[in-house]
Image 1 (spheres, one colour):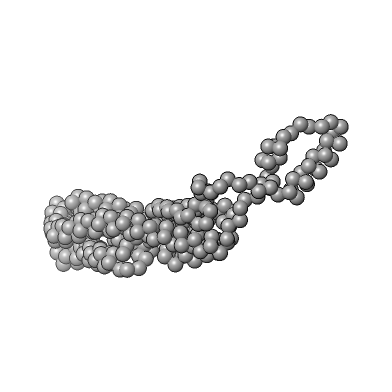
Image 2: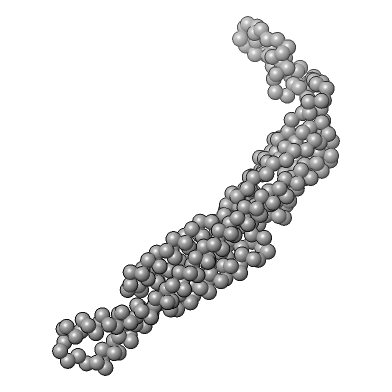
Amino acid sequence: MIKSMTAFASDELEIDNLTVTCELRSVNHRYCDITLKLPERLRFSEPGIRPSITGLISRGKIECCLSYKKQSNQKQLISINDEAVKALLSATSQIEELMHTGQPFTAFDVLNYPGIQQEAETNKEVLLAGINSLVKDTLKKLVAAREQEGSQLAILIEQRCQKIKLLVEAANKRLPEVLQGIRTKIKTRLAELVEDPDMDRLEQEMVFLAQKLDVAEELDRLETHVNEVLNVLSKQEPIGRRLDFLMQEMNREANTLGSKSADKAMTKISIDLKVLIEQMREQIQNIE
């Protein structure tokens, strides 16, 4: 199924005495670029998160954020690091000797100093298993969101492909009239300038000019590319890069059609084609 690279998903899980939250954000990118934002307490889980993401996502800039909070139903027990308190008081005494004066501070000030309070330990194996499960569940939500957005993009691209087909059909119908108009215009102009023109030479020149201005080949290639886009949309694999390449080829044919155009109607068709192709190209930038 076609997938968008833009999506968001979040989930949370109670693990031991913690409530862990996982948030995943995805935007478009040429490759799979993963950024992890983990608190120090959960840093040990990083090696298992990246493979989980790359196992389900092949393209996109992915940001994975983990956060945690203590569960409110847990008893608020404060554990003190005795060694850290002794070291802090010793350092304070040395500083006061250098300052030749004592500085008033309370036990609460000491309690707020980094490293004094010790958090209750959580079983790392249980925590790691829970985090891996949480990340996988959040990834499933992210992939589902990417698929939902992708299905909408597929509809928009298919609609524009049908419009391009109609423009190609209109151009093919118009082409014989355009070529005949060119021949008539040259004959009329030449008759005004030369009383007795060399008709054989004139015919050769008109054939050469008609070949130069003939866009039937470009129109055929455009139709082929459109059919290939519709075919690619049905594939069950990442298709963004292939679609982007097809947009380049279609744009090249539309530009050639415009440069060869010797008719206002064909020029308008060329412009309309380029507008539709550019609209598709912008949408395809978000496809995995």
